[in-house]
Amino acid sequence: MAARIQSMTGGTPGKLIFTFALPLMLGNVFQQLYTVVDTMVVGKYLGVDALAALGASDWLNWMMLGIVQGLTQGFAILMARAFGAGDRGRLRDVVGSSALLSAVFSLLLVGLGQLAARPVLLLLQTPGDILPNTLLYLRIMFMGVPIVTAYNLLACILRSLGDGRTPLEAMVVASATNIGLDLLFVMVFQWGIAGAAAATLIAQLVSGLFCLYHVSKLELLRLERSNFRLEAGETLRLLGLGFPMAFQNCVISIGGMIVQFVVNGSGVLFIAGFTASNKLYGVLEIAATSYGYAMITYVGQNLGARKYQRVRQGMRAALAIALATSVVIAAVMLALGRGILSWFISGTPQEVEQTMSIAYFYLSVMSWALPILYILHVVRSAIQGMGNTALPMVSGVVEFVMRTATALCLPLAVGEIGIFFAEPAAWIGADVVLVTSYLIVAGKVLRENAGSE
View 1 (tube, helix red, strand yellow):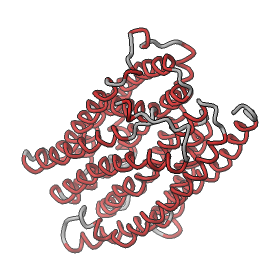
View 2 (cartoon, rainbow, N blue to C red):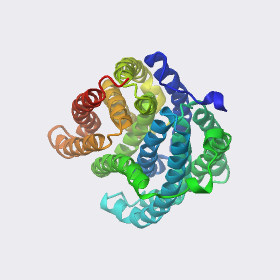
View 3 (cartoon, one colour):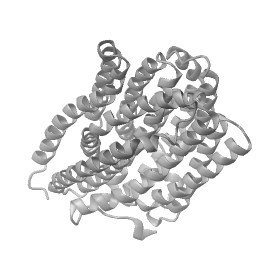
């Protein structure tokens, strides 16, 4: 197991970042695979109404996941710093405190999710014919928040130590589990949309247990009872990193819910087309997310080791790799998008034609704007790795403003298709804030530590 742990404080930055991101990318492919299979099974076997119900749950579900990921990724910044500095005692304390905080917040989120699900869906004017299925799906998913939190924390622990391989293997196992259970629960047992939710949660549980097994094998993470405590100073540091990232994701998802509110007023076929492309959003973002994880670990470890010039070297290399990747993915989606979207859509020929037209237009818009999204992930993660999660949070607020303003105003000028430009507008707004912030933060870090390497 020790061989999987990787220091990113020496060697060629571009190679380190890419080789670290590659297994994360593959892991995300498998994670997206079971999301896509969920959508395919629901859309093809249960029909357009069920597909629309699944889509209407997207942003509320993503909000919960975003809060969990934000908290655990924030905690991982301190883990990477301690590992880069070679301070094993501090690393164990950070991991123990993070586990306690994660447990507390996961239980709070279960209660909050169950209380808020129906009122929020009604506020979003979710169509009455899909509301029961949407609410059922969300209630099941929200009950599984502790499972999702455990997996994300364990994966963040491994990534902070430079281990991208174990989360990949966990996702392979989870994907196979989810696909098998989807087919069993939905097509054989005929549990409907509840079966799709149950399959996803069980798959997450399997991936979490897989990561827990590998974490327990690490000698440097042999935790004792004394490591599981919430000392005031350390707790505030962890929350100071985790809360802004969770809030950032929360604000972004609120913007997404406003977009969903606008979409919900356009009829079931429009919702289904929007959902089909939205499920490919994760596929478009796979490599961007992986480069982001790599940058948080890379920057955190190098700052912990006081190797400040390597941060800038890594940033230049990551941007070049990310932009090249985004161009390749965009080209594939533009060329093969209609064929891929056809996997999700069923119904009468007229329904399929209308839904496909809506879905492919949205996919095309996102594909052309993809380099903007990749810049966003790399720059935001680099700033977070420096321990500054407030400025990325501000970028999340700007995303919210741009996404909301575009979704509410542009359709008034150009019709329903205006809603599809909300995402690119949000990415552009965030990039303006993030690039400016990175130049300021990186300059400050280097000036304050000039001559200390």
